[in-house]
Image (tube, rainbow, N blue to C red; front, top):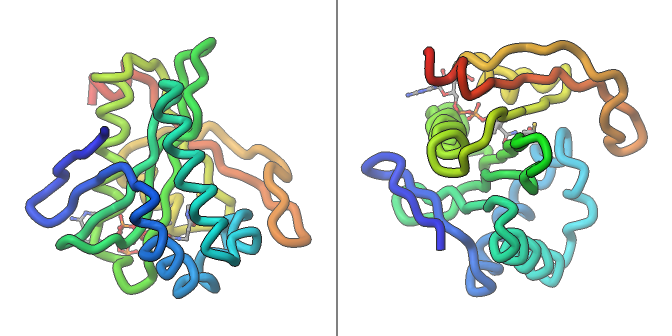
Length: 181
Ligand SMILES: CC(C)(COP(=O)(O)OP(=O)(O)OC[C@H]1O[C@@H](n2cnc3c(N)ncnc32)[C@H](O)[C@@H]1OP(=O)(O)O)[C@@H](O)C(=O)NCCC(=O)NCCS
């Protein structure tokens, strides 16, 4: 099962059903922040919704479609990051992430995302990593920009977020570019 040490105090690991209480409280305590940019938040209102989510990540892993991990800081679950199901036809993958409000601003997500990009090229043998972000989601865009991903342009009205469509900025990096950098 995926488990990675990112730094002395940050690690990533697969979540199991035993993690449901911590995951659900984290979502519940950060609902306002998360719902601004993540479409699934209003559909995650009961503990059973976190059970379903964790089961879906275990299925994804079992089907070799990539993985999602909890972000563990000093032993505590503080967020999630990982891959959307790998596109095997095109050898590409999309990375997603979120972190608790009180753990933001410390570079945790940037270092975890850097790890996921490295891993996608080194271990999963993929050719392209994409990180789309809503045009006004400046904190998410900053993660991609900090890591040197390329802004491919705008995908218009790419996502329906609670009653409105938002444009995405498509950030991506190719294996050749990542190795060169
Ligand atoms: C998007 C999101 C994950 C970004 O989180 P974040 O805390 O800004 O990202 P990081 O953990 O990488 O921290 C970066 C910040 O730490 C600072 N920092 C401190 N030490 C750092 C280090 N060693 N390396 C990088 N940045 C560091 C950076 O300067 C930056 O601060 P700033 O925002 O004041 O410029 C977070 O805002 C979030 O969860 N949003 C809601 C969900 C969401 O939008 N998900 C993405 C959907 S596309």
